[in-house]
Image 1 (cartoon, rainbow, N blue to C red):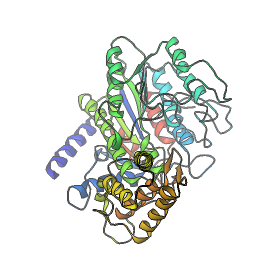
Image 2 (cartoon, one colour; image 1 turned 135 degrees about the vertical axis):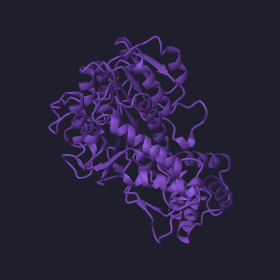
Image 3 (cartoon, one colour; image 1 turned 90 degrees about the vertical axis):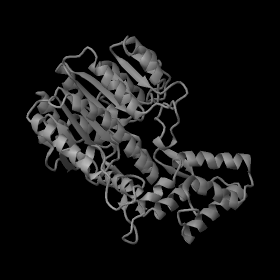
Image 4 (tube, one colour; image 1 turned 45 degrees about the vertical axis):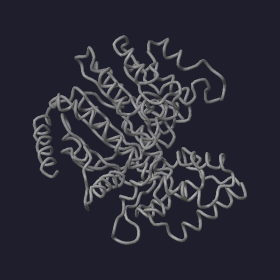
Length: 470
């Protein structure tokens, strides 16, 4: 394993040295939403533990020749949200939390690096594992004063004239921010020349017939996000498929290069829920999309730049609580996300309203390895049992809310118990001010070798494109 990693490292370094002075023709701008330094470190240490050793098993992007870090604060808060964080990475300006592609007064629209790429004759793709009108992808094509203006954000796709969009779908396809019923966004996009492909099979049917494509979840899929990697079943759309489709579509009949933004959006969602095992699997899933970019880079090493970064860290993740011994491998016991576990608990409550404590314990053991493999503290078992009594015996509604989910409290407490057994801690259910990582390889990557402000990243990309951000 070490020999393979060394060979890979030397090969990447060699390619890096050759391409470092070239200007990129192909740019991959890959953003792990909520993926701070500790999310990367946890995933690598988890992989090593599952291999039976102490240390790390590196992700593809952490082996890039350039590795640094950046700040993430916004103009209004020490802790950014995804609106201001995404805007900083897109337009090179700090703005207020909640704003998309505009200055802090919410009056001046700002041009993103994606628009500069388009002006230079490059094709442009914007992709994500959540909705296409969500904050981070929106910052690259939209200019709106509020990230919650989903319909207005989606309408900005028309003015962008970008070539490829991919994600789960649209959150408010028929309702504007005033909560008025308006023309459905899908026909609006189709009228402006976009072909909407619902599902990967649908994309494969239209990919050679349209120059502008929007790839979304299939008809039965959630428009808000792709499924967590931990819950995915055969046939579910994946971020890796979207990335592959974007590369294929953008490269077709194109001699001018392309700019592709890829967001792993559900790392953030899992961390808001303090769901450690699900967060690890989302980082690994994002890593699969980076592998698609790296495979392209290896075919075009002198013309390609890959940047991997984040908009902020989520959860204030703590690696190691209590003793110096880590037990991250316990996270492998979890079979479903906290959200899906909530569904299973609800199903048990429906099928067996007066389920015994032993039946509930068996479900939690089957899904999380609690008691059977992972030790549960007396305090955690007491909390779980008290919640069981309220929920299954007294039939009271017991729920826990995070930013993107309302879960059964039993599921939340059970995942919390597994986190503790895995020596994984959390500071909060929100974003933090932690540094964000920067990894880069390829043409122009030498510009990212030092500590930066998040707004410096797109400014450097603009320089490489021969343009300038406002």
